[in-house]
Image: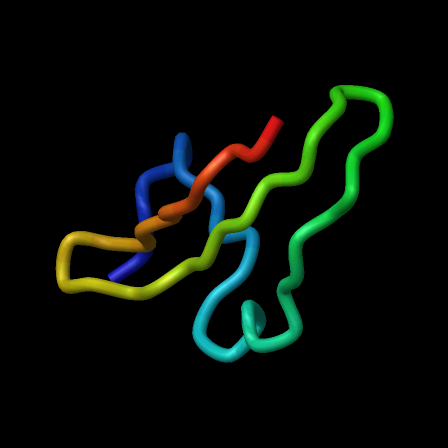
Length: 50
């Protein structure tokens, strides 16, 4: 079954294995987050440290 034309898969499965946080000096602070796959889809959870 193909997804509807309005949806686009950007990454899937182990594509997130090398994901890391970024020290974003433009926005300030440093965020920590992680991704996990659930039956409902991809969940991104994190904490913003300013």
